Length: 172
Image (cartoon, rainbow, N blue to C red):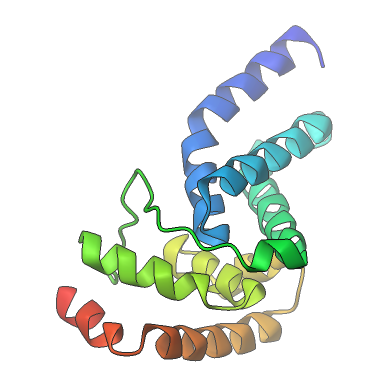
């Protein structure tokens, strides 16, 4: 890359690194892994910077790389047993979920218990605000798969939350 392209990349990295790191955390539930996943996504983008003609597609490319790396990592057996009790440094807040500590704690704990691909769909659809089509592109699957994984993921999240679901609803 020439100097101008390096500067463009650096500006994009600085503007998006915190948001990408938060998304990575929601996908994996561990800040150290989130840092690794974010780094993987940005390194992949850096390699393809010249080829990404549409600069509006940068977020989609990084998101797709992040999600796929997260799902691939979750398949490693030693990763599945890890439990982390940290909360995001920047609150996870959506109009549907609210931003109280108890709500975030219950939601993140529930998400950790949802299978990785279903978790990725829920994060993309409800916390990242992607529509079915954009989520399908990020996951590299069909829209029908996104819909079925969303339904299964919500069922798994409801089961994981158990009694905490009532607390979640009352907090919103």
